[in-house]
Length: 326
Ligand code: NAD
Ligand code: LMR
Image 1 (tube, rainbow, N blue to C red):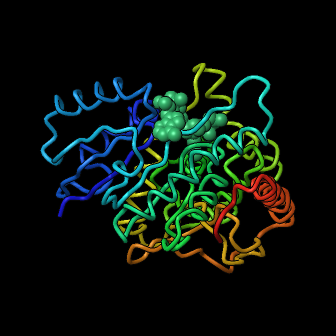
Image 2: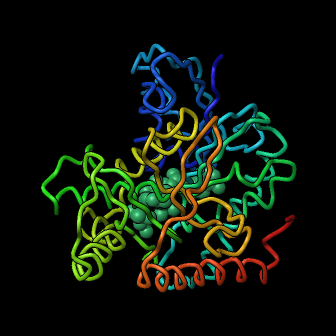
């Protein structure tokens, strides 16, 4: 079977890094043929045609077809995986409410187009910021698609947390498991290393280092990349999107979990429907939140703040009449 993967914002910097990884089989596997549908705004269609030309020139054995369009109905036709990357960036002087409204105007119609045209098994990952609330908006507009099929990306934060811990402990990053990002993909996120294992064994971490160094470093990494590169993270974001979908489709490794923002069913006291990052495992193609973890007082209080921010974002789009449906 050929898997249809839709990438929105395909001419953007993350889209450009992502399309070639998908075509190479990094996301779905080395035996899985893939069809790419690339969605862009009309002004970027010509540039996206250029991306399609380069994809052809890659002579990827798994790549069956590439379609370029500015029409969401065409882009999501038969989509099994929808990578929602294209978003309206915050411009100078733009208030947060304006940003939410501008993005609701993108993610609402895209959610509706997914419901109308995608394969019934569709899985959507929102990368475009504000990712958690954009995912909630898309899910609300996607009548008939289970809300749990709309997720937002905190895997980049998760990978950043693993990298900072590996560096601190002087251990290979691949030997670390069980790190969690709670909450929003924003500066209020809660990176939580309290369950981390190194080669299956617990390690003691200094609470002052966690609170004063580790958490600010992980939560501030996106801003640090922007300051250094003059542009937001791109290849690492694309790589995290590949990791997210690969684990969703093929399952998370035994004994480990990853961080995924998905609609709360009330786990850990997070209000239902809020798209919140949790520790999760994927079994048979479905995410399940890892429940019953003990959280320190510090983690609980930080979680309170990040969930409050998500609730405020939800309320803001609701007030603007942009959270249709459920
Ligand atoms: P970019 O500006 O380089 O590219 C975005 C692309 O989206 C542009 O080509 C634009 O034309 C397109 N676009 C805008 N509206 C569209 C629409 N309605 N339909 C289709 N395409 C549309 O930005 P980028 O660096 O690729 O980042 C994309 C988004 O990802 C941003 O919102 C960024 O903040 C976010 N991001 C999220 C994470 C995360 O961890 N969740 C990490 C990095 C970046
Ligand atoms: C990131 O985490 O790198 C981005 O979400 C930062 C941004 O604001 O684009």
